[in-house]
Length: 444
Ligand code: GDG
Image (tube, rainbow, N blue to C red; front, side, top):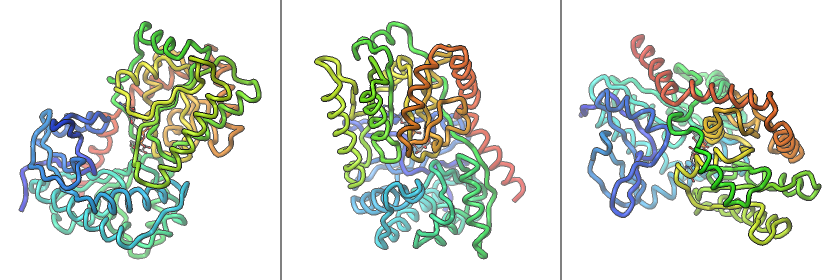
């Protein structure tokens, strides 16, 4: 059976959330970039609607056709929390926590990938283009290739691809590799990720290596620009007008290095190297039932409490901590108001937060402290680069960012990075991938 969609996106989640019985768009660069392509090509998006044990018929939202894939509570636990986020996520982020290898989780991962592949096969028209997203769905290309040899399949990995020596820990490494190989084109964030994949494929005599490419993802730059002065003044007043306002914005995830940046700030305060400074830390709740996420949250919250207890004054905490999502307009005000942005992941496929901050400083204001282990460090190479495993390096980058503030060199760096992000936005990313995929398709 084939459907009538010439272009199909397959992702773990649909680009909508159900709030009080209504579908609302879940904001994200991916949907912004793909919406025009979907509309132009009578396309559809296949994904999970976010509620376990619920059946929904296909529907259209904001002009995009959505094809829900149903997951039950066991799928959520074993496929999503288990294999995707307790096996693959830590393995692909270089073992920041120890990956857990469970055969039941693997069986479930395979079964859920089959559901997604089946839904994509049903939605795709004869000769359609199907673009599969991310680590949760690595078997879909191979499964879909068997079901529908006529379609052209692209795959993009949003997270890092590990060194083969780490990847080979995975008991199901061959099956995952075979799954990915079903794609006509596999896209990675950084050259290093692509090279890791090619090394792995080269060491496997059975491998049939598909075309690969490096396509660093970006943001919808039209959504991020400097807020007006009144909004900036308001944010700074709310945090008691510190001389230096620092900002962190992350999903609360152990890969993001939130505790390490708090430790750096605490030590700088201890040493008297940081005066009249405040930090806004937005830590959006994420994967909250997984033990390693609970432990990360506990560590972060203990540090926030301790730092405020030691160095805060009445009505003047050092760390303003928000453990909930904030609206995008408010996020933009925070980005615009912050003197220093702290992006200190141990490992990150790209890190869009760094690009969003830079996009909010077209006038050369602000400074970015950026981990060398974020994919974004390749393009944002005029940031204050740090090694999050070395607390002295994080401290020194914070101090040098503060000292360089308002210097011509600092302004020049921000203006140059801003221009880069504006030019290389998420639409350009999607076009680059899809035109490469179209070229592969013509040569098939
Ligand atoms: C994965 C990869 C890769 C965060 N808090 C709020 C909020 N956000 C938004 C940010 C940003 C997005 O969430 C986070 O994106 P990141 O890229 O920083 O990180 P991951 O979630 O880990 O994403 C990553 C990405 O995929 C894309 O390929 O870059 O490496 O790990 O857009 O703004 N948005 C709102 N309120 C919040 O409180 N509105």
